Each structure stands twice: as C-alpha cells, then as structure tokens.
Length: 280
Image (cartoon, rainbow, N blue to C red; front, side, top):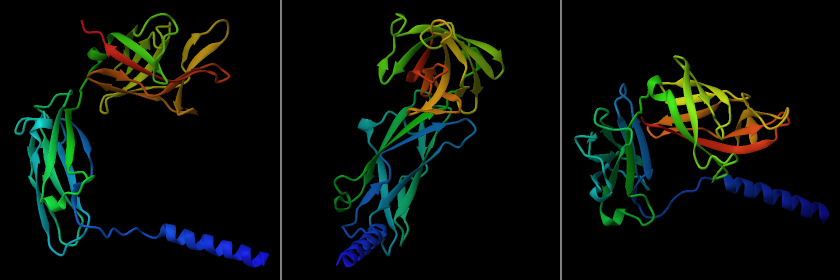
C-alpha cells in the first residue's frame, strides 16, 4: 500500500504541474481598454517625438473594429497644436486581432523639461466599457533637459536620505553645501558629498542620457583614526561592482542607492542623495 500511495502522490503532482502550464482562456464578454494607465515620453531634439498608445479588445472579431479617443480636458495641461498633435484620433483593431494603435506627436520646440499632461479617454459604446478596466490613459510629455558644464559647475545644496528618513549625522540640518568643479570636458568632482564632509568624488558626465556616473570605492572620509570610509554601489542590501548612476534633470541631481562603508564593509546604507542647484 505504501508504494501505491507514493506513486499516486507522484502522479497527482505531475498532473497538477501540467494544469498550471495550460493557458488561461478568457470566455467573458468583450470590452475595450487601453493597455497602460500611464505613459511617459521625454522628447529629444533629434527624435520624432512619436508616442504609441495601444488599445485592445478582450475578444477577437471577424470584422475590423474602430474606436475613437478624446481629450479629458479636466485632467489635461497639454495644449493640442502646441505641445502635441494627434496623428490620428481613431484606432482600428484589424479582424482577427486583439490590439490596435494610435499615435500622438510631442512637439520638442514647445515642450519644457517640467512637462505637461495629456489625458485621453476612450469613446466607445457603454456595452464595451467594463468596470475596472483602463478606459483612460495619462500621457506625460516633457522636453529632454539639455544641460552643460557651466550649469553643473558651482554651488549646490544636498540632502542625504537613508531608508526614507533624512540623514543628519553632523548637525548640518536637512541640506548642506556641496561644490561641483570641472576636471575636463566630461568629468566633474563633487566636493563635500555625504553630510558636507571633506570628500571629493569624481564623476563622469553622460550628456546624451542626462546622467552622471560615480565610480565606487572612492575615499570619502576617516571616521576616527584609520577607519577609512569608502563609496560603494548597492542593490537592495548587496554590494554591486558598478558605478552609482545619478539622474540629472531640471530639478537637480538624484543619485542611485549607495553605501558608505569601511574596509570590513560595515557602515551606512542604503543612502540616496538629492542635489539642488543654488541659483545666483
């Protein structure tokens, strides 16, 4: 009996595994929906600014189906003809297909780095709008922030946050002073990084992607005696042998998660630093 019982369990497990891999087929009523709730598009000068928005139906049809969209004015700050243009206000889902696409074009010359919002809603028969599905989509349009070395160099204010709380170990308060200096055309040094201490971290500027890359294991400060502290990249709670990438936008610079550790890899982490430009 014991052998038979064990064999029955094994066969049951195999059958259950097979069932888990079977595709789930939707057999409910048809409806139409956007595939995403939010789309963000940063428009660059050399790009066409096109934004593709997918609209899909739950079931296939033997005939092509066409739906239109309209602007939800109450939830829109973008101006048609200025910030964007419709390529088409209708979408056709071909016969035998689930998905169709509409496009809008963001206008680089008129957009700003701060950005605007366009909210679109589906104009469809009430029978095709199902509760809980996505029948409006928010499109965030902005212009790529093109910064230069003159903008980077100078005085900044920085704030360190650890696990969601402002880190203030030295009595500087929420923000402290840092200075960015030019090393060469693509390299800067950030002085006073991490709590305003006498540190100097070198970083490489990626002008095309709007980022700065800070190599790890750079000396930050000495926490008494020979307890030297260094800069490390982390992912969650694991050290990563890669630079820390900071995103640059019109608001300033925000670093990725990093750690300040000693030789035995103990110290403070994870930390994110936000830097704001001091305007003259």
